[in-house]
Length: 132
Image (cartoon, rainbow, N blue to C red; front, side, top):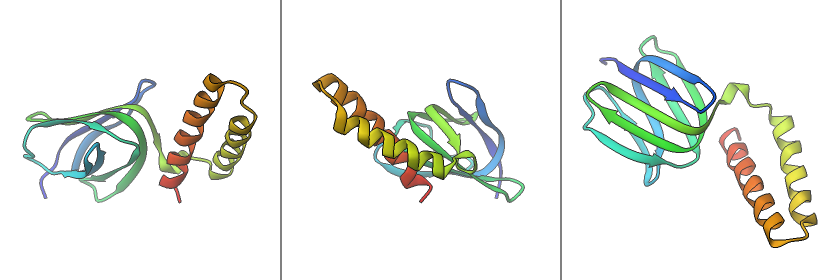
């Protein structure tokens, strides 16, 4: 296959930049695969795993939560709200965080506190589902 340029950027840092063979991303309307010379497209992303197949044969997986994907003549760019390499996720810590978030939701006294705790729990559970 022929390589193309791909970048994955989060607010904190550039997580990936290089030539790749393909990228599978969690689009708002379902997963999509980008190969060289893909038609231009811009879409929002939902939470899920981005799978990057490098031109060296290595595969890297990263969890993303929301953001935008832009495919154009220069390549493919993902601007993610949150992005973490799956290899960097500590499952035991994540499970403990989920347990604490469930307790926070159960203990919430106001509608605002319940809503905040519910969002946090949902986000943690999305990440946990990605590393299952």
